[in-house]
Length: 201
Image (cartoon, rainbow, N blue to C red; front, side, top):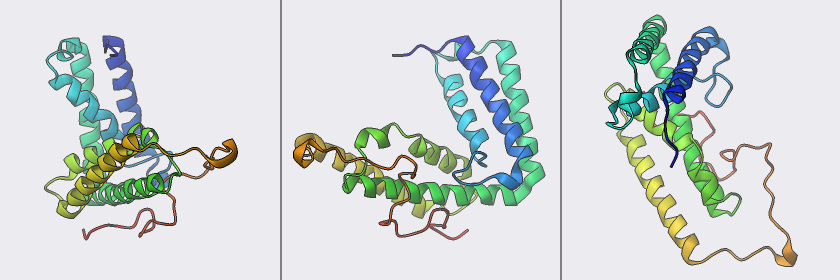
């Protein structure tokens, strides 16, 4: 098990600060799956929150690191005030897109075009959780939350089935290869296009 150090926290704080700065500076270029994403600051902030709440890791947050965390969080709050409701709606649209992407990843898994380890190691599911926590109470999230719960259950079932009945190798020793230039959420079995909302604002 990896051990978190004070240097790790300092590096994570730097990523948090960079995410806030880039999110503010590159608003016109932001997109759900692009280089700049509206949720980037929260994806860096929430792991830091968990570390601060952990009895084992909280002692690593020196007074200087705590001050830096509060400073960056204040910058994020200022960004939220500057962008207003439109920014929060952008986060909600991204959440809808990520939820649909998660559904499509499981579609790919069922078709044998990716493996369970690829999905389990992907940050997308964690990012969905971060945005649900961040937007709770502001938007109607019951439909998205219910869908994510069902997808989690489906993923567990698929993994358990795969462990019980390993897939047979391709004939003649051939290995199925997925085009790595195509994101795994862009599959034809998706019922909605990436970025389309799964529920009303």
